[in-house]
Image (cartoon, rainbow, N blue to C red; front, side, top):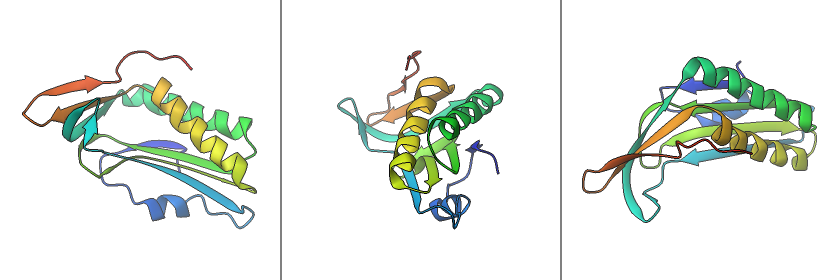
Length: 142
């Protein structure tokens, strides 16, 4: 199991959560990022993700490794979709398991924030009326 991966097919949260199951852990915290129907006052109909896969997987693995070092968690994983997605589709899944919930919550927040800031993934939104645009493509710092 990779700590960070891309998928071009629908994510199945129950299967992803099961991959982090550990009877020594009393907490499993997950985050699901889904495609919403609006952004910055515009009506969104669908979107598409692209990523620089070779670099993105390395950086994503680095992010998850940092979470494992920084927080008292036992397991962590992040899977991000690439390609076209419809409203409501699951775009990104993050999970962390730990002995206690506080560390698992903190690790999930850290992972999704760092992935959004550091991993080369680009989102193109398609708006009502036919326009489209790339969003969140600027370089951000933590």
